[in-house]
Image 1 (tube, rainbow, N blue to C red):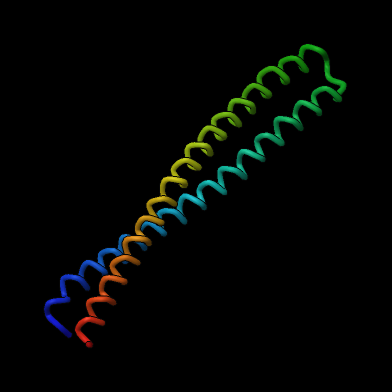
Image 2 (image 1 turned 90 degrees about the vertical axis):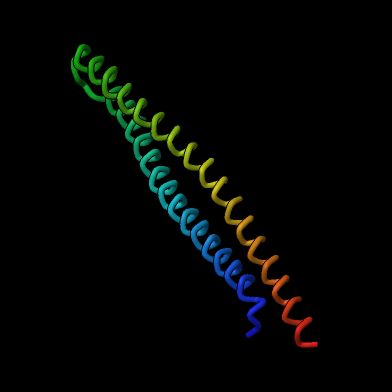
Length: 123
C-alpha cells in the first residue's frame, strides 16, 4: 500500500467512526421517542377513562368533584409534560438524522476521493 495514502485511509476510518456514532445516537433517540409516545398514549387514555368513569359512577357529589378535579388535573398535567418531552425528542431526532446524513455524505465523498487516487496510481 502506498504510504502517501495512509492519511487518507485514516480520515476514512474517522469518517466511518463518526457515521457509526451518529447512527447509534439516532437509534437511541428513536427508542426513547417510542417509549415516551407509548407513555403519553397511556396517560391520555387514563385521563379519558377517568373522565368517563367519574361521570358514570354513583358516588356522592363531593367525592366525585374531588376525584374529578385532582386526579384529572394530575393526569392531564402528566400528559402535557410527556407530550412536551416527546416533541423535544422529535426535534433532537431530526437533528441527529441530519447529522447522520451529513456523516454518510462525508464518508461517501472520501470513498470517491480514495477511489480516484487508487485508480490514478493503477494507471
